[in-house]
Each structure stands twice: as C-alpha cells, then as structure tokens.
Length: 168
Image (cartoon, rainbow, N blue to C red; front, side, top):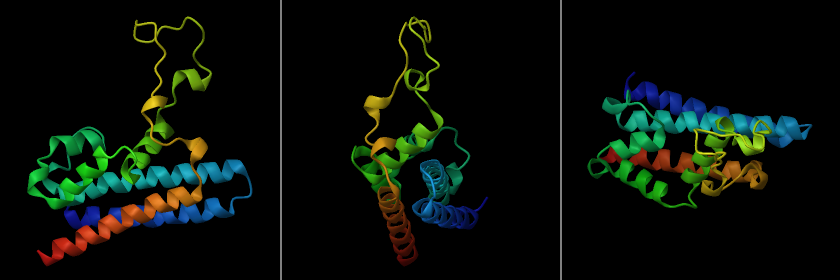
C-alpha cells in the first residue's frame, strides 16, 4: 500500500470512530453505549497503526503493535515520529490512554474474567497476569466525552502533521 492508501484508511477510521461515538451518545442501553465506545477505540487504534504506516511507508510491514513499531524506528529523522514518541513517554497522554483502552478490549486479565480460579498457575510462575496497574485509564472512568477528546487530539495531530509535511 502507498502512503496515500494509508492516508485514506486513517481518514476512514477516524470518520468511523466519530460515527460510533455519535451512536454511543444516543445509545438506548448501557450495553449499546459500551459496545459503540469499544468499537470507536478499536477503530482509533486501527487509524493509529495506519497513520504510522502513512508516515513510514517503508516500515509498514514491520511486525508488532504500535509501540513496538515506533520503538524500532529512527525517530530523529522525522518530526512526526519524534512527537509520537513524546506522547508515548507521557503516561497521561491521549496516546497512552488510547493504547491502554485498545489493549483492554482484547486482553482481559484472567483475574477479572472469572476464568481464573484459586491455585491457577499461569506460565508456571503461580501468578495470574493482570496489567491493571499499568493502565493510565480504565473503562470505569471512560465516557463518550473522554473518547471524543482522544479522537479530537488524534485528529489535530494528524492534520497538523500533514499540513507541516506539505510545507516542507
């Protein structure tokens, strides 16, 4: 895929996320609101991956998640990568909140899932894995407004980066 293809994919996922948040706001039940908010987070996560591929098309085939892919890149060559790395280093940033929420959609700690029972041994170490302490934000403190702020922050970065890249 070309950078332009990734650009279109980023834009599409951002529109889908906005739509999901609009639907969540009008949701008739807590379940419908929660499912729309999670869909928006997953679409934002897809947009983030596509954005990294947009700005680094030669590295787009790299394996791993966003954090691993960004860490593997030389951020000194591109101001956009530098800024993303700065946000990644800020535990309270919109980027870390997004990554944490996206991870929590797909990684349910066993202790919270009800699947773990007393004496379960995970990986032979006797511990039940939970990453709750590492999450800067959790679903219990998330609402449509907060996700809207994450979306807006992400859109602003993308727009600013694209505008500045055109000027260079």
